[in-house]
Amino acid sequence: MPNYQIAVHRSDGSVETITALLVDRAQLRLQMAGFAGQLLKEEAASIWQAGTWRVQARDEGGEFLYEISVAIDRGETLSE
Image (cartoon, rainbow, N blue to C red):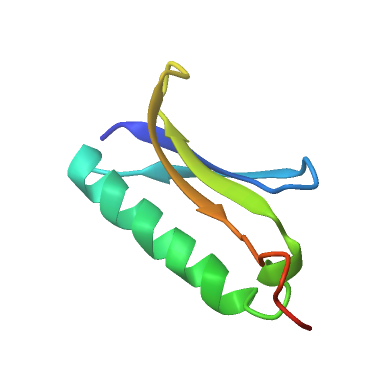
């Protein structure tokens, strides 16, 4: 089974990376979607200040495979 690197790139420049040993790329896509959903749930209170963040996947050789991007746009007329 191949190793994949799943990395969260936050708007503050920090990067958190995990290694996932998965059967195939279909399983990788499911893992990424679940991971992104988990981040949204766990960081619901702070996500609105986070700006843009990305969940990226690369293969064992470092080749880019997929990305899930989340961009927060609060709009200029939105009152706090």
